[in-house]
Length: 422
Image 1 (cartoon, rainbow, N blue to C red):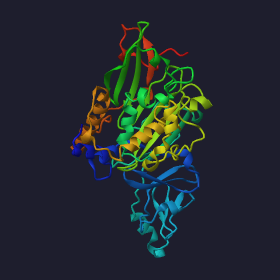
Image 2: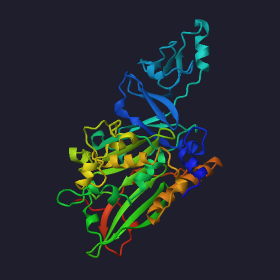
Image 3: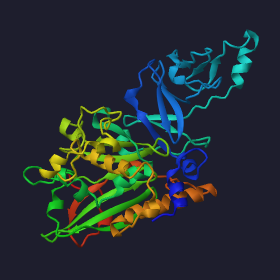
Image 4: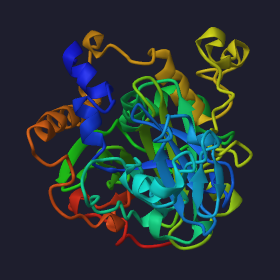
């Protein structure tokens, strides 16, 4: 349970807040690269309580500016995008993709160049990788090292990145990913196919385990590894080894040789978040079924920029189907597994009051992450590095793992990169 002050610190992400200041120190996923067309319409982006525009210039580079024109602050989402620049339609001010003002036709000709050179444009460094445009919104002269995750280094046809816009605070989204205890409850309507096989995590071992998991943790420079450990009837042990990278990322365990996945929850503001699902295969292009990441996860026909657009809301109870519940479906939320998660997150209210909670042993990972981020934000305000940024990290070697192993071995020694391929 948190105090209300701690809950506010965790949830509030605007530029004047402790958490917002800390989160701006990281590279932030902003939008799918496919949303931007060279010389096409700029795209409005809201992140961490602020409004921006992103655009693809004539030569393919991506620009990322504060939404308001530096002249009179009208939206640059209305601007002309041409000649590697945005030109505001209000007074014709032209800003090139690097953020330099190059034309100010509203000024006298003899002083235009001098005037333009003095104008400061709030533009932000970007990287395009893994099908995502990433932006650095912090104040450092040099951005921190990029999250060079494995999926950011793969060919485009090996990776699919989708996002959903959820009416809930960013940490409610992150907690939903961190919470393993809900898997066999909330999702039990989807978890098995007609033959009784476990499909939700590509992981038949869950149905063979003799007991629930115990959780152990291994601290890492970027965050931690979590081992969810079970004893199997055949004398082996079973581990679901998840990787958590601060401040946003959870890598989901899958079996060696299967597609990999990561989910991350990015703050739009205090009341909304983008929940990203990235599916990728290190060895080959994704098939249609792999791209769906399991039978009941994501349908390729969904809008990849907001795949829960038809989710519903509290007024229609997220289209819950009571007839389906009576017929045997657990939750009655029928579209896909993420819909169940999103409905639960929104049903808490956009910012849940964590001072009212009663937590148990299954919430240990949530407690750990809350404390780390709250303490991290306070420490950052005192001049210390943000969590995960104190030393260099090779993010490309981070991959989750689902595996059986002999009991004499430690799960801490197991690596997805060393596991035998099928």
